[in-house]
Every structure is written in C-alpha cells, then in structure tokens.
Image: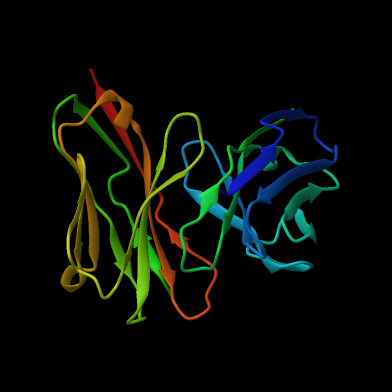
Length: 112
Length: 115
C-alpha cells in the first residue's frame, strides 16, 4: 500500500534561518506531489506542485522554493525565513489530478 | 476559473444531531470531480469521497451521506447522528478532468460536536 512520510512534525526556527521540509512517498511511481500551507484558522493554500522529477510549478510567489530530486521525494526550502512563513505545511500526493489527494501528517512551523 | 464556496465557517451542534455542510461550486467545465476531505484536530487531511460530474446519485456511507445536485452546483455533506469524533474541519474540493493537476479547495467548515 502507499504511504506518505513528512518530517519534521514540528519546527521552531528564528527569522532569517534556512528551512528544509521533506516529504517522501512509498508504494507508487511517478505520483503528482503537492505542498500546501495552512495558516491558523484558514484554508489550504497550494504552494507548489510537481508532475515529475525536476518539474515544479509555483502557485504563489513567495519566499519558498521546492525541489523534486527523486521520483517520490519532494522538498520545500527557504534560504531565509520570514515571520509570515509560520503555519502548518502539508505534503500530498495523488496518482493523477483527477484522483484523491493523500496527505502527510503535516509540519507545524513556528518562526520566532 | 473554478471556485468552491463553503459559506459556513463554523457549525456547532450537540451530539446526535444531524448536520449538513454546504458546498457550492463554480466551473465552466462539463466534466469534473468533486471531493470531500476531513481534517481532524491532529492535522492530516483524510479523503472521504469523490464524485464525478456525470454521477448525480446520492451516496450513503454509514452516518455520512452526500447530495450532489448539478442544477444548483452543490455537493452537500450530511452527518447523521453526529458524534464528538466528527469534530473536524471539512473541506470540499473541485478538480477539472483532462489534465489539470490543481484542485480548488473551499475554505473549509469547522464542525464542533459537543457531548
């Protein structure tokens, strides 16, 4: 069966520090991969999605970047975190855009 | 452009009450998929149901039921005899067919079930 792993679960970082969140999927090949951010009490904001290795589409211009170095690995990065980067980050995968998305457990990021 | 509206920001009920979560969507496509997801307090989103635009039959799964009406562009979700474990944020989503990989999510409805 397919599983998705996302880590770390929680992270506290100072302003201006770098960021790396990792997501891996097991049990499937060539999945669509997604990064979402959810601010407290708000809806889901799609940040990046990828349909293949090295293919990244950005939905919202911001302080973050994403990479897909391997088929089932999706990384969210930042060189310098801002206070506004705080939130709950969710990674997800799907077989195709028409299929349901399957989400990781999320990372709660607090910027001090 | 697609749009999903969940007008109810928060709903509060007492256990055993029935509750309906509304979802209204906008799309110019004739074929599309609709979804419901549940986000419990722990944070991860859990897929509940997918419905394609050609299938307007209502669906029931235990205490959950879904009413899809193309005439009103709605895909409402009813929980019968609600339980405390149903407390969560529920998201409705819409995806195009034919190659689009970006789902459109509603802003979610927070359901609080009191014992």
